[in-house]
Length: 113
Length: 111
Image 1: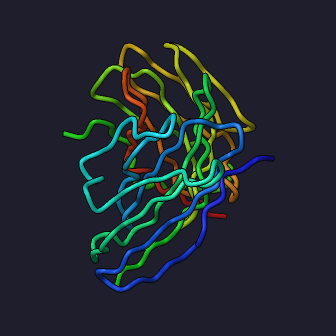
Image 2: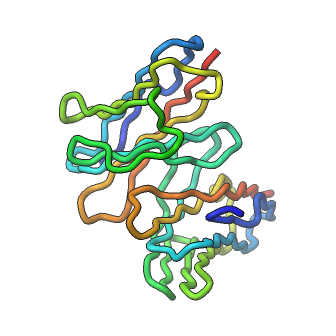
């Protein structure tokens, strides 16, 4: 069964460092999303991406964040200068055109120390 | 107040018992999704409801959408240990791409 794949599963980084979280969406999907979940809190929307551009973003998604689809299969989330409060589980999701169901990856747990 | 309220926040039931989790939106729903999450893991899609009065089932899990109340309920019949986890509802609203999630219901099944 096709699935959304995220790497790494766990990343530890020092405050101020840049991190790139990687996602491989399901191959025929065209809508991509990043969400995050701070431990013990709700899953929060960060950004949606379609046709090589951001279609919607939340207040959380400030200038420190960026997304890219570098090669037609990967979808990345970059955090330029990580802060302690960026520690969270980050989920990638994808959806096909016309479908209502979004498939989520297993998540990347980011720990900023 | 929250856009999407889930209740209860946690639930402990004995194996074999039935249970219900509710999700209420403060705005008109375009669609309502139910996901299950094991602690620290990804979200597993259970089902999606879009039309008022719609009811869907997957194995022993049934979800309904009450359009009038903008509320969905998730019902598990004859609960099993495999049902344990965190159940999340996610709302889709007209004109928005994103899902807004409830705070989750942590379900524990006691043998």
